[in-house]
Length: 212
Image 1 (tube, rainbow, N blue to C red):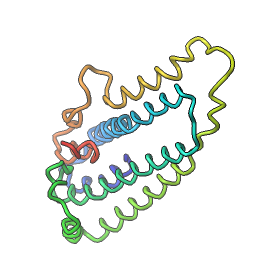
Image 2: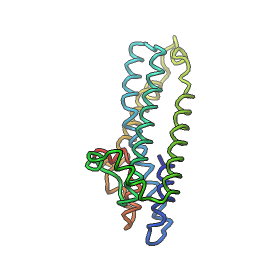
Image 3: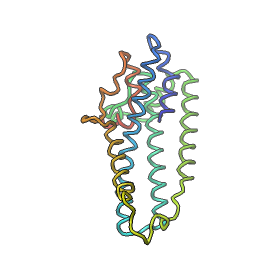
Image 4: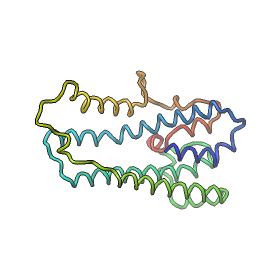
């Protein structure tokens, strides 16, 4: 998702900035990574819960490995699709799409927005999207879950093993889904790193903006 953001920057935001401020640009990308991690935190919640159920019942059918890969594959398709649609809207309006814009969106809107752009912008971002889509699915396909029996032992758990295997992943997922360790979860104001609206909006994530 950061690579999508990087291409958005070089294909559009770079040209509309009144002046280049490297510090603010870096802050925007850092804020963007936080929003990206937040998205993956939410996506990992059902995986974590299902793994707990499997561990409790000691049921590890190999068909579930296919389910996990399918789940991650569909999520990556969704991420790529929303980033692609959002790119054309962003170039025209200087901000990310919100739910209201998706609600009135159709394929003809995408065609009209694409026609209004320079041809190199459309070609480059389309190629980047296809490449990232393919690479993402190659990584997902290459996931190796190993043998569940390797995770079990006839010996009692070592001290701290329960915390390491159950509590630590829960804490990491919780922090990722909140996007911060502060009392207030990640919100719109965390993207406001500059006086430039384009930089602030670039820090946001199209998935995060979908229900806003």
